[in-house]
Length: 109
Image (tube, rainbow, N blue to C red):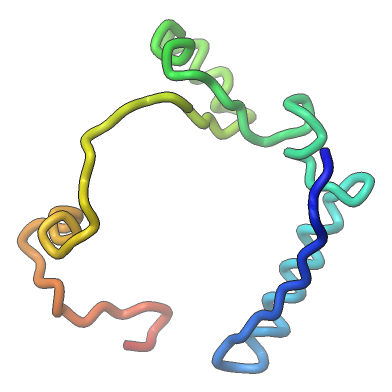
């Protein structure tokens, strides 16, 4: 697998958040092998199991549960309803709630 090196600059509101982010990032990188995340080393090293929709639909519930004991399942090729990104479809994610409602995230609003 080849790719381009990206240098990211992260801007956070508080300096301690940036320090916390870098600590988490460093902890994640400790799991890298040969400079790559386990998922880039092949399916035997990944925490995710990628299945085509047709394959997933043919699997028994027991087989799916056995996979889910050790992996996240990602199903590709599945179709679903097409939604535009607008007020009507966005509000359908939480019916009956106002789009103008104040939402508290991490204790601050």
